[in-house]
Image (cartoon, rainbow over all chains, first blue to last red; front, side, top):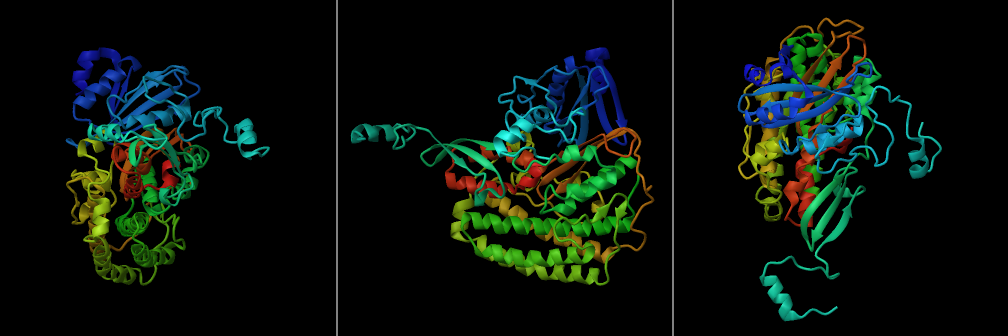
Length: 158
Length: 385
């Protein structure tokens, strides 16, 4: 599988290895969606999760991670790509419908936009909330004072 | 408003959607967030044509507490009790998943005795979770008696938890590296007694429901979902198994001590609410089978692995998942080598399964929405985290 991808994309596959028995791929963002489709066609028919990690000191601040599983092979693989702040990524809802809510959650918590998502809006936080809580620069005490004042009628939620 | 009867009849015969009294085809109504049948604070916006559901949209987040953000500001040990507050009816499973994830990251193994205690408590918790599901699900559909039966029997499990660790619901039963507490005196007897006590009670639940005509009418062919749809939507747990997929993480990728026990994975064929009911009933019996084997063969020995007081897992990231009563519960943990996790992501089964609601209720009746919310077995604490 990895050799096949390497042959096709060359240096687009930046890393393919195993950590503590778990396989993962690190890819250039330009080939990631295509690779996801290839993996989907290669029996990775269950997208377990999509999540992101924020590294504010890096030039490309976000890691975007897919966790995939294949029922036929009983195997997991993680696909990872890096995105800069403000950069969007094509939605994979066409590949796995389950990613609809998962991508909405990533958007809600990190502010990463997914192009072509059918209904990209906040899912857990109220519409119109300011800031993206799981970014490292969002302090845990920080909150949307204005929202609290208007909607809950209290001075501060702290 | 008068309707021309002839025109109305031809419109009916043509199979066009029936118009409501407002003379429009569609009606949008709101269900929840405070509604007894939504099992917490779930709001569902329904688009209806008369009684028929054309589409739904879930509005969630009312119980959002920012669990993942909290994790980044706590040490690995301090975060442990927080995970119990997600799926609070199956807190032991949550704790098991988290502890095993961190153990994987630290590259340590819980000792065999600890693993057996973990299996016993987790399976008891699975039964408790299914009992709570059965009681409330039946109540939603209109059968009141099963609720009293299941809560009566669930109480005995909670008593065992209370004797073991002092808590009934949010147990915090396990620690990273094993278990904090040795079993209390008489633990084995209590568990054995329960394993003998429950099977006739499960038969009792089944007598009330399995061939009950109202129950069958309300559940059979309701909220059908195919195996292909389940996989595409990431639906796991009893819902997936009821659609005919024989997949259970306890067998597929065994964790704790599950590889040492004999048990079957019950499956259904139709993927409807009735099959999901049967699958969960059988799962309770299989859990009892596992508990019986575990309690008979429980080894002696230490219950904690050697773990540093201050945990500093090497930098890296792992994903570990277990079969929670609701489906695949996963933890994705990123360590930067410090005492606090850099990122903890919880893959909640209820959240992902709830997404299937729309597919399952389209074309069905409003009353079936209630049945389907019940059969998905969601816990809003876990959906919203």
